[in-house]
Structures are given as C-alpha cells and as structure tokens.
Amino acid sequence: MGVPNQDIVKVGSLMAAKHLAAIYNRPDYPVIDNRIYVEAGDGDLMEGISHEAASLAGHLRLNNLIVLLDSNRNTMDSLLSDESNDNVAERFKAYGWNYLVVEDGNDLEAIDAAVQIAKDEQTRPTLIEVKTTLGYASPLADSHKAHGTVLTAEQVQATKANLNYQAAPFAVPEEVYAHFQQLRERGQAAHKAWDDLMTQYAKSFPQEAQNLQANLTNAIKFEASKLAPDFAENEATRDAIHQLLQVTAEQSELNLWGGSADLGSSDKTYLDADKGFQPDRYDQKNIAFGIREFAEGAALNGIALYGGSRAYGNTFLIFSEYMRSAIRSAALMDLPTLYLFGHDSISLGPDGPTHQPIEQLAGFRAMPNLTVFRPADALETMYAWETALNQQHPVLMALGRQKLPTLFKYQDAVKQGVPKGGYILSEAANNEPSGILMGTGSKVTLLLAAQAQLATDNIFVRVVSMPSFELFKAQPQAYRDEVLPPVLRQRLSVEMATTDDWAQFVGLDGVSIGIDHFGASGNGDDLIKRSGFTVENIVGQYKQNFLK
Image (cartoon, rainbow, N blue to C red; front, side, top):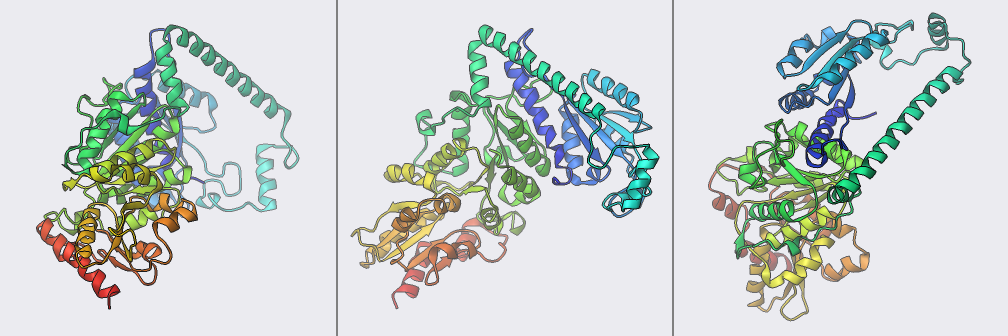
C-alpha cells in the first residue's frame, strides 16, 4: 500500500516527459512521447496534496496526464457525503482541467471512449470521473464496509453467484491467460518499435542520443572542482550553491533542473540564464512550483522515477515540514532527489521563531536512507554537491545566508573529508590533541578560532568538521576511530540546532552547545550571541567542563 494520494507524483513524471521531449525530440523522431494514467479514489482527492498538484498540473497544461477517478461515494469509515461535499467537476475545471464523466463503471466501451477523448486533448490534463459501486456484486455492495472487511466464505459464494463465476478457487480462466498474452505481445511490439526508432535517432542525432542514454543510465561522472566555480574569501553557502548550479547546468552533460516554492530568489536556487519551465517553454529548467511544498516534493519524486534528469527543490529549511512526507517517500524508494533548503538557523532573527529551524535537522538525520549535509563554507558545499550528484540516493543540504570564510587553507582536507561525512579539519598545533571540538555549518569557523585561543593557554585540541552524520557513520570503524579516537573523551560539539543527536559523537563525558528551545524575534547577531555561539563561550565551556 502506498502513501495516500502520492500517486500524484505522476505530475513530476509528466513534467519530466515534457521537459525531455522538448530537449531531445526531433521532427519524425518522437523518442519521448508517452502519457501517464493515474487511478485515484475519492479519498485521494481530499488529501491536501491533490489540490496543490492538480493546480500545478493545470497551470503547466500537462495534457499527457489522464486521471481516472474511482467515484464510489464511500470512504473507509463512512459515506463520502459524511466527509465531503466537494463539487469535483467544478473544482477541476477551475484548475484548468478537462473533465469527463462515465456514469457506469462497468461500461468498458464508455470508459474507452472517454480515454480516447482525453488522449486527443491538446492543452489540458483530464479527469475522468468513473462512477462505480464499491464491493460490486457482493453482499456488502455500495457500503463503506466493503473497503476493508474480509468477506466470509458465504459472502464469497454469494458474490460468485451474482457474477455467475464458475472457476475453482485460485484457478485462472484460459481467456484471462489469452488476454494477458495479447497485452504482452502488444507491449513487446511497442518496445521493439521504440528501439527501432532510437536506433535511427542515434544515426541521425548521435550526440543527442548519447547524452540521453548517459542521463537515463546515470553514467555521468560529476566533478564540481573541475568546473572552476569562483568562490570569494567570504561566501555564504547559499551563494556557493548558486554558483554551483550555474556551472553544473552550463558545463556538465547532466540534465539538471529544478525550482523552488517561491523562495528561489532568496535562497539563490535559480539558473541565471533560464527563462523558466512553462507551457510554451518546456525545455527550460527553472521550475516555479509556487507555494506548494508538498506537491513540489512529490513532483521531485516523479521526476526521479521517470529518469533522464536530476532535479532539485528548494524552500526554507523550516518549511520543509510541509514536504516531509514526500521526502520520506523518496528515502523509502531510494530516489536520487536533491533538496536545497536555505535559511538554516536562528540567524534569521527578525522573522522570529516561526521561521527559525531548530529540530528539523535532527528529524531528517533520523530518517533512514537520507543523506543530510550542513556545509561549513563554499568548499564544503562544492564537495557535498559533487558527492550528492555522484550517488543515486536522496540528499538534503542545509544552507545559510550569512557570509563565511572560505576554507582555502584547508582545501585538501575538505576535498578528502567531505565525502566521508566527517574529518579532521585542523589538527592540534602540537599534533597531540587532548580534546576535540566538532561541529557543522557556520559554527565550524568559530571552532577554528576557539582552537587558536585555547592553544594560547597550552590547551591543544583537534577540530573536526562533521558535514554529514550519515556518511561518517557509514565509514569503516578504523576511520571513525582515527577522527574521533576513543581515548579522547574531552569532546565538545557546536551546532545551531538541537543537541540530542550529538550524543553519539561526544559520548557520556562530552558537552554540546546548541539550541533545545524555540528561537526568538530580534537581531540575528544578538540572538546568536545570546544563545552561546561565541568563541568566548566555546572556550569557557571547554575549560569549565574538562579542566577542573
């Protein structure tokens, strides 16, 4: 059983089909030319995501989408009329959809006729409402109890009698075998026709065919550093990802595209030279998802399932809550989706606690099969991006807007360490550390300053950057012990987020500086200082806890 109404991820697959068709199709060579059918129920259309996704599909004029609504007027608990009085026809017409109705769900000719009309539609997605009877022919027909109730042996016999069904239990009639054999042969013929078309396409357009095949098979190796982004001495990680998006889209063979829930201009997740993915510009790459975070996340899943491109999505980290279910689905399906979430901390002071993420990273780090990065600077962002594009798993990056010193001095360590999730950024000056300072994001710079200040008191500590907990924990035990030697128990972590998930690294004797309460409204710098994110507090906490 799937997640309720996330079949609407097909909107993403349809977007991918339109996008790839606009890029690769040539006259007489429609190599990308398919429709997608969705079967939905009354309950699916009550889910909030159905409103977001249907609105987006109507706006984008995805005429290759055909939804067949199983309209049986019953939900799990009761009659549909007890829960909803939506006018489905007018609702979808308002979204810009074509609406058709079939009054009898057993009239296969009427259903086929409606599908043919939908296939001829040129500018709109189509909803076909097919009116059916839940539990048809059974004693529970037209009752919500037919949803989940197991029929008794007597009720099964009564249903068979009503249908005049004579076959023995678990027997498959020969005419069913024959029907499915016809479907198999039809599919094989269609597959061969497409293979033949691709063979001719490759002869006429070899470069396009090679690029399409490379994207479909995930054969493109990505090396961000060779694309030569021009990072400044001080760079916000959101500005770093902006540069990386440009050079990736412009210089890589990878079909990279994506968009934002109306926050791309703030988080810098747009492509400068792009006019925007719209009905008359399906070849373009900037997707205006609108303020539809859940549909955005589901659409990214659909794009990933379709294949042939890599897509990213964006919003503020705090608003990721609206797409969490879609992210969980991506992790469950192990899809190569990319989430670039901005405004990662309480430094977003004036907007107050409603916009300041606190517990979000801990929640995502607890999600199986999701890799989370919180880079400390532009270089860590670059190698995190490279790592993300070279794996076929979902990746989330938490990015900030404050300018941070670029770690040029430590470039070799960063390059080698980021793909491993955690690494020694700066060894103790005497090469014999008595303790470890560790952290992520913007606070890594503070750790380097605290390391230097402690050294003036002959207290020598190691600084460990931990951009990805998941990748670090996946390393061999020998490597983890090299970075965090078991004998070094004086460990202090710093992160602008909750502290609970740092216990696995600092241990029982360690100390964590973080935020275990909601933020506040005010000047961002003042909030940071008041929360203890200063060199003086880090040094003081280290001495207070480990030098008694």
